[in-house]
Image (cartoon, rainbow, N blue to C red; front, side, top):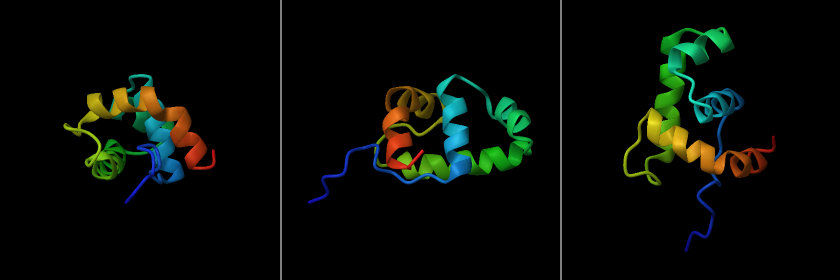
Amino acid sequence: MDTKPETAITFSPRQMQILERLAVGKSAGEIAKELFRSKKTVDNQLEQIYKKLRHLLSKSNRVTVALWCQKNLEAVRQFNGK
């Protein structure tokens, strides 16, 4: 039986940067500008994040993930050693 909390998901450092920005309502375009990346790169990272969260969330889109981040970001940071 898996007893890990829902925040026990490993994210890359870049994914953490994106999650932190999603939690405050930034769009993919805004995140791309802040991180000096293309929007396509951010969209690809978002897709990987959605895949990691798909088993937890009934809908896996930017708004749902942003709300999840707002609720769980501190625990995710701790789990990911940040």
